[in-house]
Image 1 (cartoon, rainbow, N blue to C red):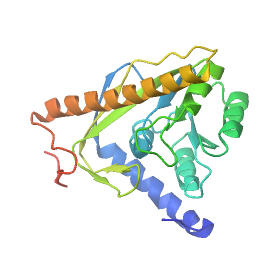
Image 2: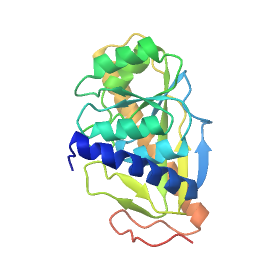
Image 3: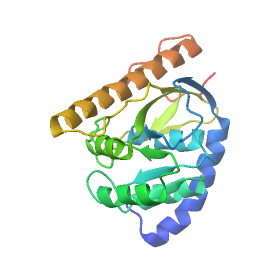
Length: 230
């Protein structure tokens, strides 16, 4: 849904309060590679639909997120700022080079946050832009995966996930992907596919951990029911 700037002005404060309050109710377990929050030697990567999870879990930690220049990206950018982060506007499809230069020039001391399947997907795909960023900045990429016991998944291309209050959430962080500084295009493409696999595996690991936590098999996607967690 596209909102006018005037509508966005009224929506952003209550949306931020809602997400902040909601995130405080979740029971979260973090597994895998250590991640206290965004760090300057890493680019933290996760699927676009998990944005609410990441910013809520790491609320009030400093980091700079690359956010789409599309009009609705303004809402996400403002929420990120109100959660203590910074937004650099751009994406793999528009304004990415300008956003990257801004991050290099002004935010080299902060951790970077990128959703490599945004802003238009397909969901879970990885564009080569994040590989170029990692190579030029000399940063490794940490892949994040999430599993949620009960949540509302929007009917959008990214299946944007909003966990229910008091539900259980597992975050799994995979081993960092180290990117060499000099890359030809076939190597960039290969590393993008590697990161895509790592993100999928991080999500699978999170699902397995959540299943063990709940002590029951998780429902197959498409057969989930909106029920309160125990």
